[in-house]
Image (cartoon, rainbow, N blue to C red; front, side, top):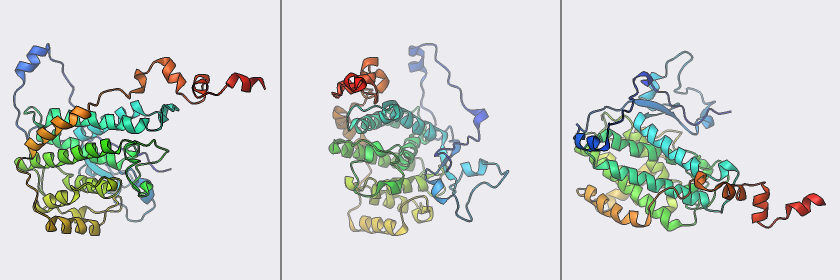
Length: 350
């Protein structure tokens, strides 16, 4: 049996920050001061490849040897996984936890066909709302802002994104390990497209924020720009291919101009080839360069419109349903049988 998807090895577990509560809300508001955006350097953990089991028998694996400490693998890409900041891992955990709160399959329930898809859209709307709160805060470091991009790239690589993506790709999604069980369709394709377009703008806005602080470069203090960018491109080229995502070539262009060599990041765990990168590179060279000088202002304007029809919230959290509602939608219960018109008492008497 292949190892579990996630192996977060915290090399600084004894130094984790402990949250402290302010005495009152007023004090919290008045004491907030702008911080050095490059303060609070990221600490890293290893996030295991979700498809590690596909290559477990390969020879010459770049994996920890018997008795070897995992510390080194938390700061570089390997066959074990990729470095992800603790902030990024925390946001990823939140996305997955919120998804599980809404997943009817995990509770042996059937509410309606596209419940999981709508629920996943709600999770991502909440994610974008959180990003919007942090991106322009002077009390949030630039590293924390990058953590949102880490989280969404790793989520799209994970198995949990299938509920959101199941309707949008004609490709065999099992190649991308995003669907490992029967998922429900999200029938609102326009909604999905709008969310992905905002994720596009989120990525480019964050790239710009990194550039402002000389962090978007090959020798950046951020250790995973290349591999995270590659995971985003894998999503665009693979599961998200039917969304007409036009931002792949722009991601490649920005990385090329910053000296971030994406070709060196290509590896067997990511379903994207150097040929795919060349095609995107050719595309951006043939089109007019995108002006990203006002990308922050564009985010503000676009998100203002986006949130009118994408309110997020907790409508699809199953625990918020009444006990009777949950029972009536749980497979195998008499309440479920009655709801769909099966007379179980008559069947039992025969």
